[in-house]
Image (cartoon, rainbow, N blue to C red; front, side, top):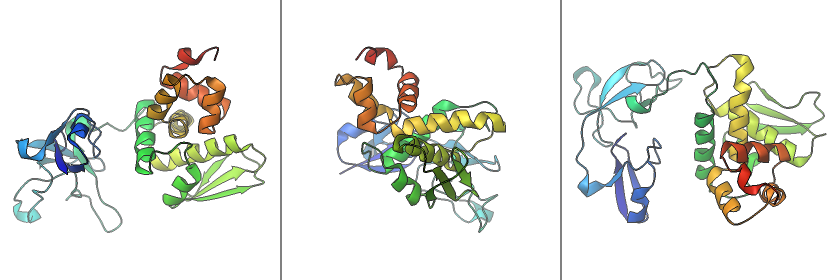
Length: 249
């Protein structure tokens, strides 16, 4: 088994073959950043805490921090932030170059990337079992006679109207899961843009969508394969730049 090291964040990952060295880092998502462990020549990297914005000297995973009062070694993306971590939660360290400042406008690429990572972490199956993914995230999904179009209540319960068809219910679960997953830091009236992008990508993940389009499937067949609504399918195809390739089929 090959062990790869990411040149961006320093995380180590076991790989099934050398071919996976050409992929993206499973920890930080950096593309073409993996090298075999025996060929890795670590260089210091700067880390930043996503929560308190503290900056620390970073290094390859496994060096680990020493005593915080007399720091030895370098912090890694696997360590909690030494400045803001409490029993209630840990500050997350990431490489400075991958850090995204708190968002003031909808960031749909971030939302889509988060959805794909979540899909892959649950087996990359199609159609996507969004109900199971929500349960795995400790969210309770209740389908009932609600008078709203879908709601994440108290950050723990997803309410889904029973009057909606199944495809719409699936989108609602994915949408509210997006709210629970994403770090929305945009005005309230704009967070729906990110949640919609997340939901469309989770229901129709781009890698699987590209494969479906390349195999010659038309619009209706794609929607059926992914058990997605017409609107979600349109959103996903447009976001992936694939809409023109399925027109008329």
